[in-house]
Structures are given as C-alpha cells and as structure tokens.
Amino acid sequence: MTVTLREIGDTNREAVLALRVAPGQGRFVSSVRDSLRHAEEKPAANPWFRAVYDGDEPAGFVMVSWDVRSAAAGHDPSSSAVGDGSWMLWKLLVDERHQGRGLGAEIIRQVASLVRDAGGAQLLTSYVPGDDGPAGFYRRLGFVPTGEVDDGEVVARLTL
Image 1 (cartoon, rainbow, N blue to C red):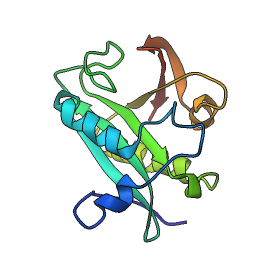
Image 2 (tube, rainbow, N blue to C red; image 1 turned 180 degrees about the horizontal axis):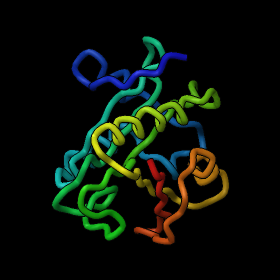
Image 3 (cartoon, one colour; image 1 turned 60 degrees about the vertical axis):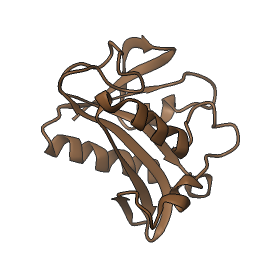
Image 4 (cartoon, helix red, strand yellow; image 1 turned 135 degrees about the vertical axis):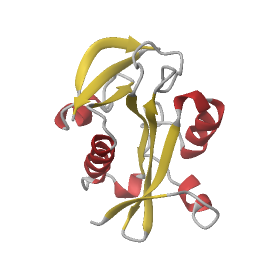
C-alpha cells in the first residue's frame, strides 16, 4: 500500500466525487461532494483537503481545518471546541472498496505528521457516537475524548 495525499483538480475531480463509504456508514461520514460544499461555505475554518490515493487509484478523501488563528473551526466554525492555532480533522472518508486495509490509519499518520511539521501540538476531531461508528477507530489511533460534545458529536484529541 502506497498512500499519497493529492490535490483535487480537473483530472481527478470526478473520480474523487465518486468515492463512497460502505452501506450503513453514511450517517457517520459526509460524501466528498458535501464535504467540498462545507469547505466552500465555511472559509473561516481554513479548509485544507486532499484526495487520498492508494498507488494510482483514488481511495479516499481527507479535510482538515488548518491552523485556524482567528476563528473557531471544525465542522462548525462557531464551535467552542476548537480555538486559535488549532488543527481539526474535519472530514475523513475511505472508499468502501479500500476499507479494512489500514488506509484510514495511514491517512491519520500522514495528516498528523503534516500538522506536527507545521507547528501543531494536537489534532482534534469529532465523531457521531453510535454502534458501528468511528469511536473505536479513533481510540486505537490515540485520540482521547476531551469531554466536550459539539452539535451532538464527541470531540477527541490526538496529542502530537
């Protein structure tokens, strides 16, 4: 598995937009199209997003609220969960055909490395609680709930 994060442009946009999560996961993960719309609607969140490739094949999508200095960020820029100078894993989608092979963990490792290199000391995320949800995935990667709940989502922190 060779995972790379690539910009989305004219040559790969349709393939990235076609990525889908497994049945039953839609309540936990926004589509790529919806995620890009959220990025456009919330520029104060300083969205940074990339297509995730496994070799030469689009396999996922990641979006981070990048180093927000002046406004709270995350899926809701008015959130109290994120303050100045924060990085928030805002969206993470692994296509159903690529799940179960460690791709999600590798994406988190690469994003955490980029954030650390940019001066970040933590990476926040939030997730919808529920059976078959992503809580266990994030816990295995070292994210710890902060005790905050934002718009019904559990906020978790990964110390870098």
